[in-house]
Image (cartoon, rainbow, N blue to C red; front, top):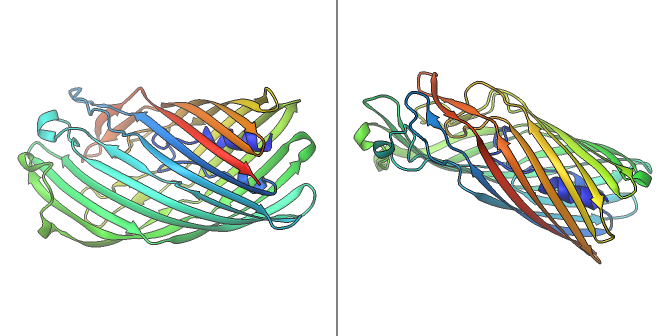
Length: 381
């Protein structure tokens, strides 16, 4: 049941724009560290959000601003000897993708035609050492790379606004993870506590801005206004508590709690006229709980529930979501040394409000949702 809990929990705990947790795209778990022998897994998740809002003043709609996206994950585990094992995880922990349809002049929405995207790649190499039959400790190095781009056109008054463009990326930057676990294998019980350090990245590239009248919004920024840029972004530290235990023959209860230090986070390039492209003012707690049942020797099913509280206050115009409630269903089928796990998760996204240049109410984003579908194939050598 160990792998069953790992597969379903990982598949059913990840959607990006459906989370209030900043730029979290998928939650890195430690489950692969507890595999046995040599094990490889490959996964893919596709997320289809639906996020739209309307101006508070006159009801002008924003249109659907959240494109679908997908990401792949890769995991490898190998037992070096009876007490030491090595694991490698490749994933995309952070991301964002926002695209307002239309143009300001035709839709009347002040951010129409604006788009922004954040991408990441992460490689984690970790060792786990079995201290006793029940206690183990683990730690590793995390290498992270970020890319970002934005084309923003914003009407900040009745007279005009600004056009802005950014293309930037970082080199590989490094952090670490440390943790410990307690297990009672006879009842499939495991409790693991993991700390993930923050990682400071320096992004370099080009950016530029131009103050324009209303008729010139959504036009390219003149080349003369674009120049090299460099700025820092610190991806936050986090603490993850994961637990699972058999509660009856063939039945497993599992869950996780994650605290992420998003308070004070910002992406603040040098020339963005509005200050920060992205900013968050509160930490985020993410809760997931699930139950799994092995139906036959080959087939296991699961259901999960996820929750993030709304943070209140204004959300950014390039990420107008706040909190979520999700429900997921998963299945795993095992054939010999191969396992195939699939999951589907529906998230109800918390209502959010965005602000204008005067930091007063601009728009309401209500009744939004997201659907995530994932598959993972594992092989035990």
